[in-house]
Length: 420
Image 1 (cartoon, rainbow, N blue to C red):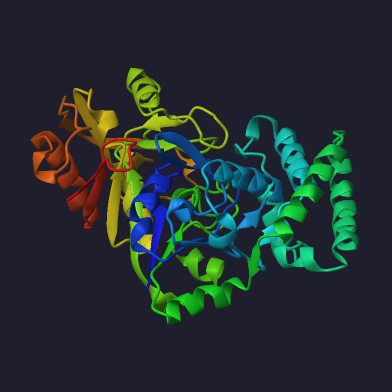
Image 2 (cartoon, one colour; image 1 turned 120 degrees about the horizontal axis):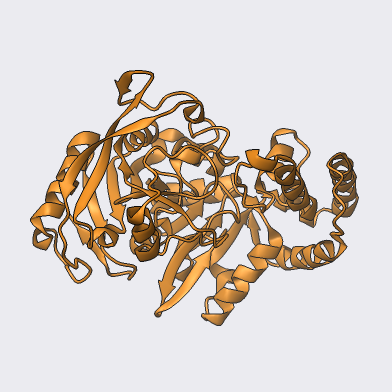
């Protein structure tokens, strides 16, 4: 069986902790898209750890972890992550596997990312500048280099050809930065990459399935950043929804069982783009401060707002979500009043559908208010012991989405998850 965990908002929903919570139930954890622009935060022995490319099951003994072909891989960032694992005594050489079809991020991809974003001025999309977009562009343009290529004798000559192509593009941007030091570091990291378990990912994952092993596919970013169905053009460059599991790992749709969607009890977004429920007041500041809403990868402060049920229902629909995990519910503990967006109002009409090109519309969220629970829930262990006001809040979300919130995270600790 293959279950999927993915974000239902604009990323940063707390997927890392949730995957870590569920990981012991699975034999294989597999990343199916994204790259080092993702940041999955875990707490191991009381210490904060941020994983960017390595699946979040790496800390679970006996679990195999696959970086799938749908990922774009930064070898330098991967080596740094593995050094962190070394400090925790994790034997990643036995438990980490990388698909040979995974695309490589080159130093010039990062340079192109920086040059492109700088050229946009006020129209920046908020790229993490990790080279993700240019790497996916080379993939679809059939120019990219893949992990399996590093074992080929012609790798250096192919690298030079691609680098020269990139240099012409950089010249068009009048980009003058010297990346020679980055390249030296990069080729050292490629030597490290060659020493790891490079496998035929599609055979690896399907063999595990045929043996009856339990597989968890781990998504990065969030559904509203999907290249097709997100708030285009303010999106990432990959398929972040459940459909991406099939193309990002090489499995057929009928092998997918549960789709577990992650949402915060409120909403956040990093970077530019439409965000109908964004708060520019003391409530937004409180959510940011109490929720520690700063990017795990970039450190950028996140934009904060009320939960958007219109966007959330849309994300559940396109993913085929079967159950929901609500994270950071404890962040709302101090609020007197809570709001949820039940519909959008624009052009004199009210709708419960996500419109095309949201950034072109003056969307006004239509809210329903709830009384806050004004109680510390971080120590609560059972669903029945949650405050009545919170149960009403969750019940409304269940009814609106027609999907049940089965788990509620009430703190950063790995044990702070309540089953409904």
